[in-house]
View (cartoon, rainbow, N blue to C red):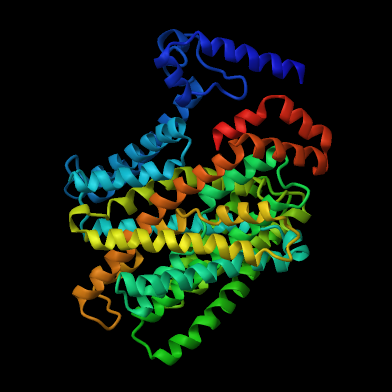
Length: 530
C-alpha cells in the first residue's frame, strides 16, 4: 500500500513537469498496465506520451490491418469493378477505420464511450458524401449488423448468473421488466401523438428505445464494483442480470412486432406465433447450450475455439434462420438462452461466469464489430432529409420518457432491500441507450427498401422507418452522455463520495481490501475513468 502511494505521488510529480501538449497527449496515451516488450528504439523515435506505447500502437495497427484484409479478400473474390480503389466498399472500410480511431481518441480525451464518436463519424461521412451505399452494400450492412447483434446477445447470455437469478429472481424481474414496460408504453404513446406514428409503429419504436445499453452501463458497474460500492447487497451483479433480461425482451418483442407488421400471413396466426416463438427460442437455445457443455469433451486441446465456434455459429444460425422462416422472435431468445445455459454448466466445470475464455473471445470480437455497427448506423442518417419537427418532438419524447423511467424504477425497486439513494442510482443506470438501438434502428427501413410493406403506402412507410432510425440515433446521442455525466456528478460530489466510501468500508464483505483500494489512489482513478 505504501509502495503504490509512493508510485502515485511519483507519477504526479512527473506529470507536473510535462507541458500542456504532453499533458493533453497523456489523456489519450496511458502507460501500459504490465511490463511491455517494446523494441529498444521505440521510445527514441516515438517518445511517450507524445505517442502511444508500442503495445497500444501494435494493437491499433492490428485492428486496421484486419479491416484492410477483409476488403482485400472481397476485392480478390468480387473484382475491382465492385470493390476497387474508387468503390463504395473501400469507402466503407475507411469509414470503419476512421470511426475506430476517432472513437478511441474520443474515449481517452472525454472519458465518454467511443460508440458516440463512432456514430457521429458515420453521420459526418454520410453528409459529406464520403460514403455511398447501394443495394448490395445495404445488404452487407444489414448482415454485419445482425452479426453484431449476435455478439451483443451472446455476451448478455454469458453474463447471466444462475445463482443470482435463483436467489433474487423477483428483484431481477422487477428491475428488468417493469421499467422496460413503462418506458415502452410511454414511448409508444408520446411518439403516436407527437411524431404521428401509427400505433403499431409506435410500439415498434418503444420496444427498441426501452432497451438498456450494456456497452455503457457495464463498464461503469465494474469500476464501481472494484471499489466495493454495493457489493454487500450485490447491486452491480443484480443490475447486470436485469440488464441482460431487459435486452433479451426488448430484442425479442421488437422482432415479433416487426415480423407481424411485414409478414404476409393472417393477423391471428401472427399474434399466436409471437408467444410460440418466445417459447421455441428459449427451449431450443437451452438445448443447444446444454449440448455444448457436453461436446466438445472438457479435456480437448481445442476446447476453447470449439466452444466459441459452437456458440457463435449457433447464434448466427438461430438469428438468420428464424428471420428466414419468419419466426424472428425465436432467434434472439435462442441466442441468450444458449449462452446462459452453456455458461451455467461451464461454471460447474470450473469456468467462472463472464470471465471464461469464450466470454473473452466475444469481448475481443466486439472490439472489431463495434465501429462497424455504429459507423454504419450513423451512415444511414441524412441530416438534410430530417424534419426539424421530428428532431424537436423526438427530443421531448425521449427526455420525458427517460425521466418517467427513472421515476418508475425508483418505485418498482421497493421490496428489493435498497435504500432511496440506491434506488435513484439504479434509476439513473437504466437511462443509457446505445447497442440495441444501433443494431435495430435501421431494421424497419431495410425491409421497406427491399419492397416489403406493412399495409400502408411505400412513401408513408419510408417516412415512418426514417423517423424510427432518427429517434434511435438521437437516443444514443442524448442518453449515453447524460447518464455518464449524472453518474460522474453523483460520485465526484464530495459528500456523496465520502459517504460512498464510508458505506463500502462499513458494509463490504472484505473491509481490508476496500480500505487498501481507497488508500492506494484507485478512488481517483475510478472517478476520472467514469
